[in-house]
Length: 471
Ligand code: ADP
Ligand code: GLC
Image (cartoon, rainbow, N blue to C red):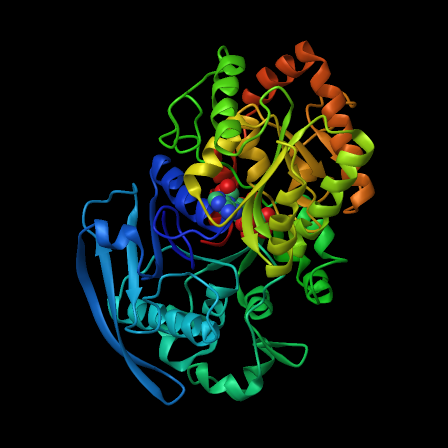
């Protein structure tokens, strides 16, 4: 079967979060099963672009409203990622340093999607499935079905995967000219609420819709940033498929980002060495448990709760642990976390920014990873942590619910708490610190979690079955 993935991110080309990891891994595992998988994404100005060689496969000319533009599709020459990678270049629009965060993001991603559809028509190539990811690609099912220019693509089955319904690609109706010509009586398939809603349109028009964990799908029926009723209406075509992790990239015995590799047999020693490195670099005390947070410093992740929970833990649980935070996001959360460095007695530090290498070292050297998420469609951090013998302390929601069992329960191995609140999180931290006193127990849990299998091998099969059902 041939699948074309359309996405704004794909690791290692460009990654802002878990979407990049998933789109970098899923096609690789589809190839392993003998299928043809391709990825199409915007051409940003990234290291990967400059470090690799490219063939020009198509040059086109299309438009966004009354702005006409040239675009170029380039393909990586050597199949370096294990699948065909295509980048869409729109001069001055997509070729920027960051993936998101520009005032014209709406124009950038609609122009990207228009170019993809325009190219597929010109290519006269018919994949079995077009699989679009998140709102930056979610208008494509509408384009295929209803835009006059793309009618030759109308019978290609589309799948939309929702990685995160908090962001939906909203635009006012004044921007409706961005959508290539369609019959106006189909307007309802674009909108939700009082605006064009890219993700909502994708849910209406895609042949199948998936979320990245079963529990997230369930939760979205009552909490989906305004899309609840739509999901309820379309529930017949929705299913939850848990993400996997790329075991080739995320392997503590071979990880290219740090030197002191370890296996299940050597986890105690390996963790100690990596922890010492981290503690040295961030002036922390290696004798105390190291509790980390890695991620976007935004409300969804409960990052705003961190400063108070850390202060309360120092006060109520005592200075019996270290905290190390890696992330970037809301300026006021960044500011508060930075300001707290003044409170450190060799037991707190923060690195504001995005640093792939440091994140790998933290998964390897940490004792615990904190995830107080308000919303967590799947969450990959806890899955990486498990594979690196790091015990997750998580809020019981979404994909965290599906992947972390509390160690107080049968076969459990992590720490779960119910509310995204400072009190619940502090209690979770207290439990982690208490657990740490029982070194044999910790050792046993580490060895257990490193053996859990959250690889793509099983999830990829669920996607293949889904495609088969609509092919
Ligand atoms: P989300 O996609 O919602 O941000 P996920 O848990 O699915 O959350 O994935 C987050 C991914 O991004 C993980 O690979 C994590 O290690 C990485 N990540 C997040 N923030 C940073 C950061 N500041 N530096 C390095 N890696 C980060
Ligand atoms: C999103 C979600 C995260 C998920 C990731 C990959 O960014 O917030 O929970 O793991 O996508 O699917």
